[in-house]
Image (cartoon, rainbow, N blue to C red):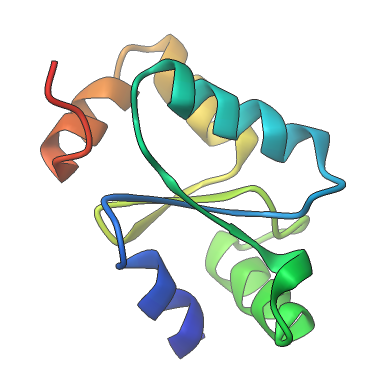
Length: 103
């Protein structure tokens, strides 16, 4: 859990992903299209992948563990939550408040 939180605070927007996850690609693309330079942490490339997946499930309160989006060091959620925030117009202000978007 400590490692996840440390990584989550490295940049204003951090997305934990798996290379084989199509929803991870979708969420990452959304942030990129919004002009956000998110830090994408691919669990596939992390030697503590399984440990981090367990920590993310605990933080999210459900599985699957990815994508897991953190804004301003705080867990936002997975695909459903991020898309809901985007469609309701709440995502961009969150990103701005975290300092990841200057529009």
